[in-house]
Length: 207
Image 1: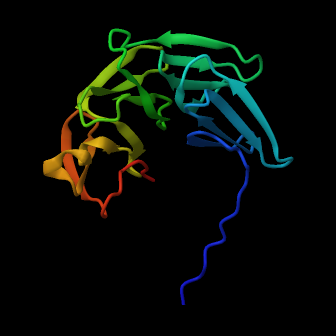
Image 2: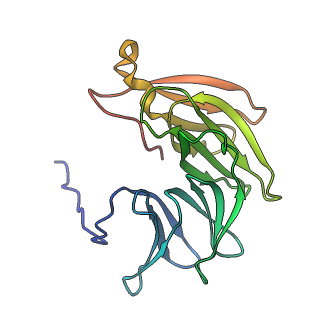
């Protein structure tokens, strides 16, 4: 007999697009964003208190910083977010010349590097997106390009591969039933891994 999952509403956030949940072990708190609502949010589990920081731009992904605060991907590039003062400090805007793009998903790897990818804001299969890596010394590297919508970044348990979903690619007429997983090896090699999607599903999350 299959057990019925116990699904509960933790926060009635009323977000427009809730994304990028990140758990802070140190704070015992959950951070996430409301992309179109331009909010960064934090739930303190011990008290159920919710804090919110208003962002100047659409903000789609966040990562924790060792010294406190967050790194974030926004429509205006990569920024730091000071969760004490609310200050937002620009880091880099690698696609300032591409107003039709914005950052979408992003995560911090175990080496402390923030990987984040871009997408076209028209939500079309046009492959204008790229994958970037922000190093601890604040250098930004473009790792790959030619992606429609970077989503669901995750790593293998041994850190030898990174995976992501290209959400809108499955919307191409000749690929209606497929999503694209991209695997990056440490040396930078790229291998395409095709994953079957069910019916009209769109690949957005990996774990």
